Structure formats: C-alpha cells, structure tokens
Image 1 (cartoon, rainbow, N blue to C red):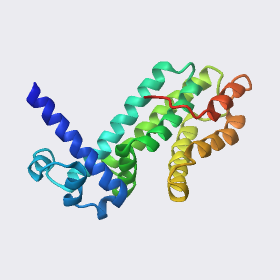
Image 2 (cartoon, one colour; image 1 turned 30 degrees about the vertical axis):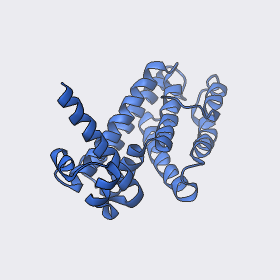
Image 3 (spheres, rainbow, N blue to C red; image 1 turned 45 degrees about the vertical axis):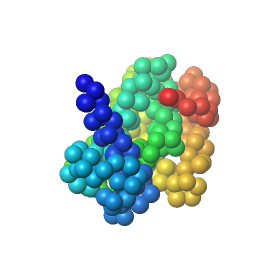
Length: 213
C-alpha cells in the first residue's frame, strides 16, 4: 500500500508539473525537459506513468474534468435550489480557474487539442448536461420562467463562461473574472428568473466568497 501511495503521489507530482508548463507555454511550447523541471522528478519517473507529452496532456484534461465534476457534486449537495446550484457551479468554476493550475492548464489544452470529436469535448458535454438537468428542475420548481428552454440556457451559459474567462485571461490575467461573472448574471437573471427568486439570486451572484475548499 505504501508503494502504491508513493506511485500515486509521484504521478500527481508529474501532472502538476505538466500543468504548470502547459498553462504557461501551451501544448506546442511545452517540452518534456521543461515538464521535468517543473515537476522535479526523474525522466524514469515521468515515463513510468506517461509514455509521451500527448499522453500527459490528455491526463491533465482528464484530471481537470474530474476536479470540475467533483466540485459540482459538492455544490449540488449543498445548494438550496436548482437555480442557486447553477450560479454556485459557475462561481466554483471561476474559483478553480483562479486557484488551480491543473484546471487552468486543462482548460487551455481542451481548447488547443479539442476537435469536433474525441475526449477534449467531454468537459463541455458533461457541463452542459449538468446545467440542462438543473435548469429543467428549476423550471419545474417555478424558479425559472416557463418560456426558458433548459437546453438553450445550458448551451448559452457554457459558451458565455468559456468566452468570458478567455477575455478575462487576455486582459487581466483573470483578476476580474468574478466581476465579469457577476455582470453576466445581472444582465441575464432578470430575463430568466422568476420574480420571487430574483432578489436572492442577484445577491448570490454578487458575492465573491469561495464555494468549495
């Protein structure tokens, strides 16, 4: 068991080093020698777990996706309503982008390596499916206006957040990501939320506290 724990720790160390390299340099700019430097492991340790730079990149994407899904599960377990869960999931995504190198690298790699088919589309598909389910429950509960299509809303939110974080990264290194997210909700919520839920949701959208630790 101790040997397995050490192997798991080394693998995660390699992933973190790779994430730092991919985040800063992108897939094309990152090199295995640079990844080794960031990870502070031997070449043998790296190749024991990953056969190539490409394998490492997909592993970072997979780890980022797993972190996002785990965070979403925690949010769903504590949110007081489906609409609150939608807002908290978006806020947690923002928090991860600001604090987790693996998440930032995974998002960059998903955009750089993603095609219309293949593993790189999984994060977007799963995130959209989660939001479709939540929006459907919100509409059934009367929290979302009956005229709002859950699938259309989910697609819009995923696309909007993706574009928002990219612009925020380009202009401010994502330092204004929370403000941009609050602006999005302030513009969107009055047109989709029920009147009873609107004050609570606008208050929640304006808060900057971390959702998950």
